[in-house]
Amino acid sequence: MPKRASAHVAFQGERGAYSEIAARRFFGEAIDLLPCESFDLVFRSVETRKVDAGIVPIENSQAGCIHQNYDLLLKHRLRIVGELNLRVEHNLIAHPGATLRSIRTVFSHPQALMQCQSNTAKLKDVKIVAAYDTAGSVKKIKEENLQDAAAIASELAARTYGMKILRKGMQDSPENFTRFLILRKTRLEPPEANKTSLVFSLKNEPGALFRSLSVFALRDIDLYKIESRPLHGKPWEYFFYIDFAGSPKEANCRNALAHLGEMATFLKVLGSYPRDPRKF
Amino acid sequence: MPKRASAHVAFQGERGAYSEIAARRFFGEAIDLLPCESFDLVFRSVETRKVDAGIVPIENSQAGCIHQNYDLLLKHRLRIVGELNLRVEHNLIAHPGATLRSIRTVFSHPQALMQCQSNTAKLKDVKIVAAYDTAGSVKKIKEENLQDAAAIASELAARTYGMKILRKGMQDSPENFTRFLILRKTRLEPPEANKTSLVFSLKNEPGALFRSLSVFALRDIDLYKIESRPLHGKPWEYFFYIDFAGSPKEANCRNALAHLGEMATFLKVLGSYPRDPRKF
View 1 (spheres, rainbow over the protein chains, first blue to last red):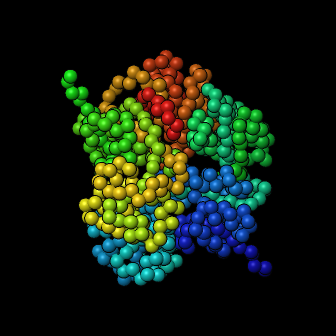
View 2 (spheres, rainbow over the protein chains, first blue to last red):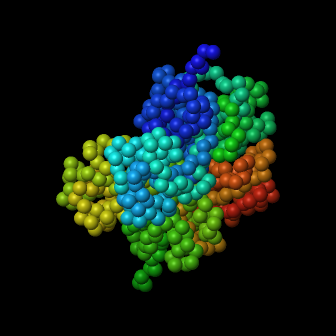
View 3 (cartoon, rainbow over the protein chains, first blue to last red):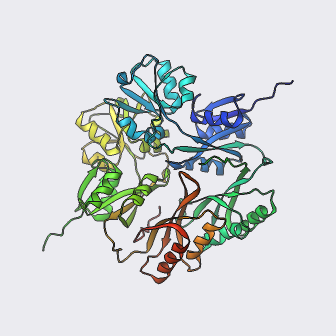
């Protein structure tokens, strides 16, 4: 049997990042990975066809939307072709020789540090140090042989670098989910697409948003998400981000999008894709 | 002339925090301040009448909504009585004797570090350390007489602790605004209230959100903001946060809220207050 070509996927962070876990869940274990320094580089790697796909976080149940990635979706000509909801489990990870009492420094990405604020505050005489990456902090502990430091990162990061988990469940809220988007340079939508993401803006008129939502409601199209975001430099104008049930291959969704196009001053369909049925 | 009693206002952070700047802008300079360790303590200080009012950030143009404070608004019986939009200007602040080249460590709150990621990355051989507070990092530099450290914080923090600004405009995006809410334990709404914030949830039915927005649209009530947030543990249900133009002292707004109450499975008016006309 011919060997199945594996996908080449870009993600932000070091090996062992939460994005890598999401990529493995989505594409399977037979995957080639390109770790990138920045989200921007993930987008550019997909755009220049250096990789087949990219995966980026778009929303966290604690921190809300990652506006930077919405901005990059507006800037680049990529399509969302999938989504994945990942439960985030933060671990306190250290050198195999270290113990909880020997830890004097805890490294992690600022976002992870914020999500573990109460639990890290309970550690005595410990300095909390912001690093550029969760998994990168585990890598640092390994490479610099730090016996008195720990990192907050994924179980995969501990496994990737052969480090030890000192404590599981470091996140303050057990309900910590991140929604990831899978991006490709394509104009095709996956055949099983049943969810569509779009962004649009409207003239600043009373009732404008209500009229724009009528294009979905009058066609019995359900909404999963709506968010308004002020447009900077244009104090009275907003972007609206909407996720709805269905895809443009269905006539009612095509019609709804055409109808919305009549009203919107700007409209971009970011992609249609199979909905992840796991809760966000 | 009798001396005018000044307001006693709680905020999260150390003296010199961005919340203190917002409090001074809102209440004037003749203000008594209670710095609090946590947002929760700000809410509790207002609830127990230890202070007259509290001020908390609710939304940042870069980071999005501060969900924790929405949760605290749901939990506590306080009212929003005002809002203030503040442009956030991050500065690199150090000891008067320090120079840019002598800095080896930069302290700040994880959120501020994230907002200054590109600019701090340009500093050579510098360790980025997360601290519990922006202004608290400046205080630490003063109290521990740290000559090789800097903090990212407000100009007010530099002035408060007599430290020096090494570099202004450390934030990566010049368009960095935070919206603050002013909270009181009261049932009265300010006479000039022209904006109302509320949170509600709906039965999970197609078109439910559209019907709920009709209570505003059919009465020509304009919306400033809408955001859906998944309700954890109830995968198909959402909270909706809405800010609308007007207040319940107007009959059409009262009627809209009563109408919304007929549909909503949960509804809480968080308060009516004078809108800050400065852009967010």
